[in-house]
Length: 341
Image 1 (cartoon, rainbow, N blue to C red):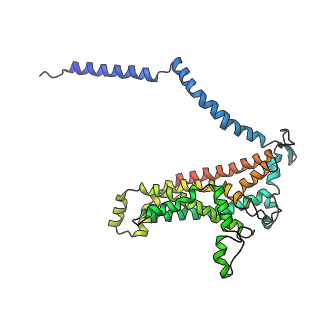
Image 2: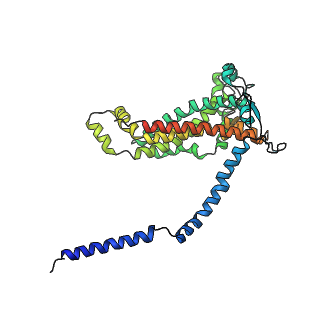
């Protein structure tokens, strides 16, 4: 059998180069026909994006500067004077005044204060309590259900069941459970502890937090269970060989390897709690005495009860700004953190 000569190998190499060049030109070379075909394929998506997402956002932003009332308004700019300068930011000025740092912070405890700041206070309190407990609770439940226990599929379904209920259904159920004649008080009445948990301004926000925890822990549990499945068993075996006990394995192996899950769960939880609406509205309709009026409930009332769409969209953009800024800084902080084992 004859072996290929050097000239044959050189010819084959040139032929291969020519074929690759021809195929590359055929695929990558932009032609007018290819540009036109690609443009035609993109047009439906661009039109749908503009009509149903970008257009409404731009219109809502313009609306936030107008005194637009469903029955009285005509879409005129709402001007106000700030430090001697006349600006079309009347809705934002009305929402943000009176500034709390120019008055007594204790007045925020009164519903007669600016409803915006009252709703902000309720939402921040709700977020400050619900988010950490949701994250820690979801993580601990996922750890327990990821171990070798009997009936863990039943437990997983039981914890996830509240997530499947709609927010309105959850609010109605808990309003009945926590009412003066509800199930909870049937057990507490013999002890003399029966109370109108859902009807008292002192306990209504706490009851709303309880509903948020009831529905949120199961959702976070699923995310953490998915994250736990991606941690290699070799890391746990190496930790055992090094003499690490259970708590040390959780601290040095499980927790840092769930870094992305922590970030995802935290951002989702904060955005969800800042946008809490369905549960609050179905549970107590923002009452009693505005105790459960959150930001989104106030936006709903301003738009669809008071018909002041300009002010409602201004509130919505303020809420968007808060969530965007927090998510951005949380993302940057997450990028700077290093995983430690």
